[in-house]
Length: 229
Image 1: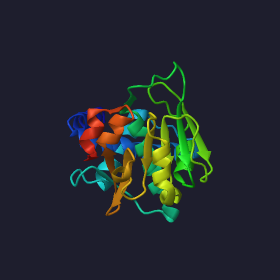
Image 2: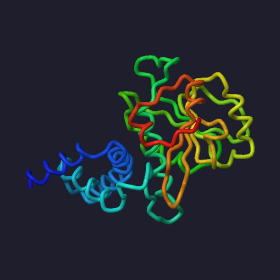
Image 3: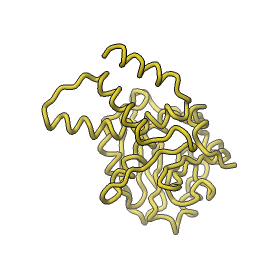
């Protein structure tokens, strides 16, 4: 068993960055579902075995070729889709720095959800996750306002599609990372967009807008994203 575990670890370390990044995103979702089941049953499973299981499951349903995407399993109400997007948001936060804005030591990373979107529930389920040693604060705001509380990440729901231009205009000059799955979001001036293509989530990053907002993305994220200029 130990030899098998080591071989899985070595295989992960040798994986292309793109595949490894997608594994991290998927594991965040699958791992949460697994832990809940284990908690209900009262069983105790070593963490290393759990890690190997996640790797095997991920490899089984996510092809390692075909671009920077993650397959979305079909589920009632599309809840898994929102969980996957939430996992992407959390992992993107691990690869971004706010160059022109330093958060006070110990301050949480504030995420604001503009409009109505089930992703807010998915993010709140992971509110205990630490990003760079910082806790998360998730706040939902009414869809009819155009100014938002100070935050590091603003997720704009599809319900705000008709007034997207006004929202982005009011954010000019701020250091907020804007994220949305509104079609062509990054091409309309948003920073990070989630494009759904053939049942897959693809990350799009508007390079110019990210620079204007003083945001610096890690090389690993840029490698798996589709860059919009």
